[in-house]
Length: 533
Image (cartoon, rainbow, N blue to C red; front, top):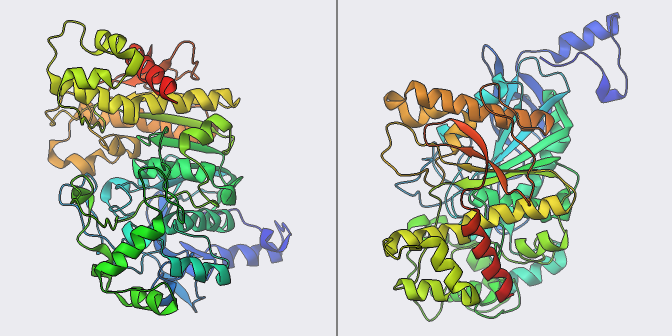
């Protein structure tokens, strides 16, 4: 499975008795040594699968709302044949990627799918799941990394804390951090940083190339890719990035840990409000101890994606968790980081689905178009040239362009401006069994992973299979070489802002390289954003 050597000790001994002894000792099928001790995975025909590898200590008790701590070493060989718990949350009934494990606070586990012939030069792809930062986990069947491993790429997934476990501030935590040296607020991102550092320290043991690592995430996971690109703590630990429906303009907003900003309370104030709701007052160590004694269910507080999109009005909002500008990991909005070049200089694949998330808070077309300011007439011309389009359809188109489509193109533009390669796409493929005018948010995942069988089961068709195979090849190729190609697809060209060129993954699963048919829409959105800044 792995190259026979004594590289761990700075030696390479081949063809000798010492070398033979080293090989026989190291090549126990499915067994490797990682930080903490030895692990053994499941050996399959073409790959070896490791699930539930601890990459940090359980963040429970005194470690709730602390940066992830080192794992406690174990004795013997740990069997890593099943996922660890997904992180604590209230599952979302209509989740596009249903959890496979019971949520719990003890959840910082990684999973690795490895080709049997991994030899130290095998590329690595690290997956970061989405779920609005309040739901999600590494266990859903559509996130299975087997097809990547079968195609010569090591796939790593991991869990990170969610909701108030992952994002929380309180004056008592700020005071504690002054003595521990911990960062503040964004514990989910601290978990992601710890996972990437774990990959850097351990992936060679699996036969992975530490110098050929790509990170990939969707939705909140795409936003997390933006965060990791901004985080100086992991600069140099990955070489490429794939951002799926991850926004790219106002992501992270202006919310800060200790300071209020226009339209937003300080993170600490939300924490104080939450503590008060549970009868905890004060800002000292006693208050923090009381917060840490609350049950996991109390911390979740009945919140999930459904509640995220239907907030309950209150005079003292408690806010269930989300990214903050902490001054260490996140120092500015994604848009500002991209404009200022304050992020990792890596090549990027970026795009969204054709029926992505889009919210419309206006009551009629006049209000909607007026929101474009001096570009109102142009917006009306682009989105509703005859004046006969249904308001709901126009509002949705504007909403998704503002939240997903134009920000994805903006990322491609700014990455190009930095001198890196960007590959821009729009995913419009719809499984034949699905009645939808376009590809909804998150429907790209089983095609990127080539796990459409797990998603669609008996309804899967030959067209679906062919589409997934074509699209999956692009992802594999990008992870291997930085140049996305597919034997059954067209050549994917580097993004050129002047052409606004993109790979269009069409409804029936074919792919075409075209000038963006929504260019006029995105141009007017961009003009309105820039004129308001």
